[in-house]
Length: 339
Image 1 (cartoon, helix red, strand yellow):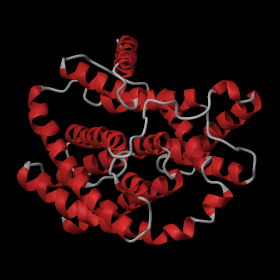
Image 2: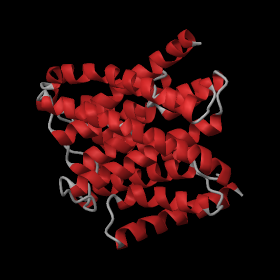
Image 3: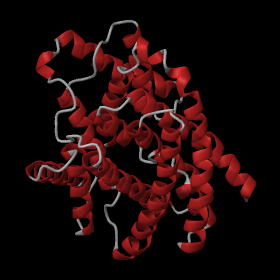
């Protein structure tokens, strides 16, 4: 049954890519599988993903981001300090606005409302929330809906405001790489992931390859990002993972969780827009980079956006890593204090 569900899910994701590509819609390899799975789930289809494979695909993004850490970029890291200092302020604003919305207006219990209001790592928030007595199903759907909303709004902005072509290949084709280059990138992804897991690093499948690849890039061993086909494959499975979370959703859950998640996502979007505008007015970053850096989407999804849009990938990812570190380390402490 699991194999059959995987096969069905894969076919639905491929159909999603084909539909988005035929309609020239943005990010077909990311949004096609996501909306394909969402539509199928709402129609009652049972879907599933294969975590070992999806996590392996996430290592590609880690390598792609790590390859952006050139000596010229690293020399600019100190200039990001002031912008990064806004990350905890953004999280405070998100919590102050999000928790009352989910608790008072949407009627969720304290633990569910608090950990759903934290725009941090999905798996960590599910774990912390469940341990605190929250509803894991509600947390999963609320966070998935937040990511769904962000990855829908941001591509629309990129196309309408900046006229960026999000249907183009996100890099050079695999045929332009040597086998040695591809082997080094693959090794950096898998070894970085393994080492990060061994030391218990959060987001190991992305951050481990990112750190190792950054070191290899600074050493001159890696000189470019993975081929376009690899990045598209990563997008495909990331879209699948988000879409699969809606599997088995009922109409009652749609009315409560999906609507609440969309409302909360809009609240976060407004807050993110305010902070992005503040960064631009302070002259800390261009508008495109600022919007991608403060958009409360998933780390993997925002990495895809930054790569495809041609933004400053290092700037964007540094802000998302900082946000996730703060949420994971501080959220349980703040919840205990509040309780």
